[in-house]
Length: 406
Image (cartoon, rainbow, N blue to C red):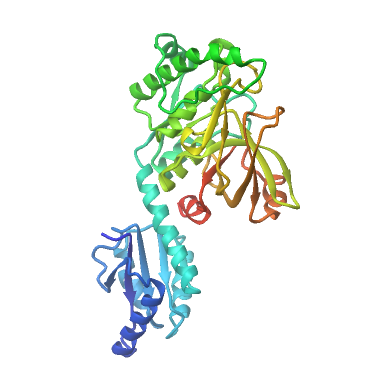
């Protein structure tokens, strides 16, 4: 089954041969490589594809739409129009009716590349949402005390994304770590950053691997597909950090976030479902609204996201094991969702360079947004918390669609 299906609405007043000719030309321009199931006026399997488009081929179809509406089981209607034979006018009348009934809809209309891009983004978003349903994400300890805006609505997340958020006491985590034996991590960096505390880092590695073993047991026993951990508690009570473990989990395809930040974990998980990659969870540290440049930094980074990594201490505490990773200079998407899923931010840009500023967390990148105005209009005036997710590739349209179309 293909991801996109196209169903038709046609007025009997229009010449059937002329309409069919227009349909063939329009869909051929829109999807030159095919890539869709043409269902015509047979709506029996409507709702079974990632994206079901209702192609309003002519005007005078509003009444026909009302006849089939009770059979259409969907939360969001997508109306496709060629702009010929009064199809746009009919689509607007239909959408207006849906809005009056408190239902959601959208008209896909414009240039072939823009319509095709929107359709493909909607289909990708729907597939990602389907992959998220039934997932269990652990909240290991509550969010760090300084994350005063980074809570989540567990009920809304379950209702809209089908994700169950599971609270797990930090004592359970500490007990698992205490009883664990260190386990090796595939692809673990072995080189240390040259500094006066290199010996301290080397001595901390077995403890970091012990933390990883404990977290693996929690993930296994609780059947988690991802988690966020109140990691600073490990500093004071275990004397080490979870940075290396989180880097390994993310590389293995299990989203793992810091500081108990649930919205950041949701963003990482959504990004993973869409792209197959877990992004870099980081703090914006510096930004320039004129150039669009932002420096992001954190002490952990997915091991499969870097082309080089060295081990250092954790920045704030100066203990344990942190990671100084080098991320390739490439196009990325900066992504974040709110804990109630009412807001989503996704903006594209390019990583220009990696930094080694001793006054910042260990992995540091400077990226330039395609749209510099977002620094003033979003980051400095209406941000969604402080942590954001840096995802390789250009995925803003699809990531926005996952949340905005719930």
